[in-house]
Length: 162
Ligand SMILES: [Zn+2]
Ligand SMILES: [Zn+2]
Image (tube, rainbow, N blue to C red):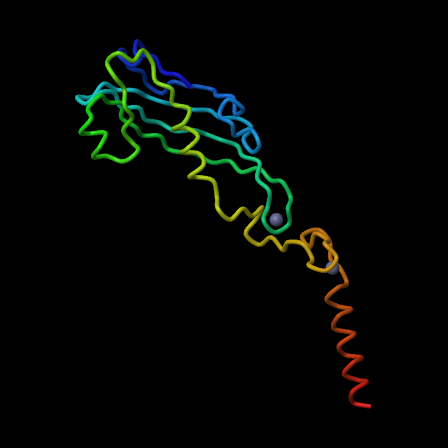
């Protein structure tokens, strides 16, 4: 996603950008990416801020079902040619030289989205997952594994008591 110096010079407010998820290399789990960004000229360069709305298709860690997860990522970066500032700050300052005609924000978008992806992916907090012995999805079905196991234990116990 490119921003041109000409538009940065003028500045913009709540401008909408639609980015194809395959151009971000995130198409495995993202369906659409909508960015709403603003840009202001600041003393050190340009400030870009706003948010990214994404809809991710994630696989539940417990029941393996694919579910959709909508989330918003905040974007807040400074574009600057000030080396001191770039060194001092973390990744929030991007190098933008006077000779640059545009800046590509793609990698910043990818980074910001990946950081926000949930580490533990659950379709719902109370997901019951799959039965360890027969593999049935315990959210929609019940299986007899546990029951028959306890019956077996009971009969074994009875055997012992004889
Ligand atoms: Zn689940
Ligand atoms: Zn089972």
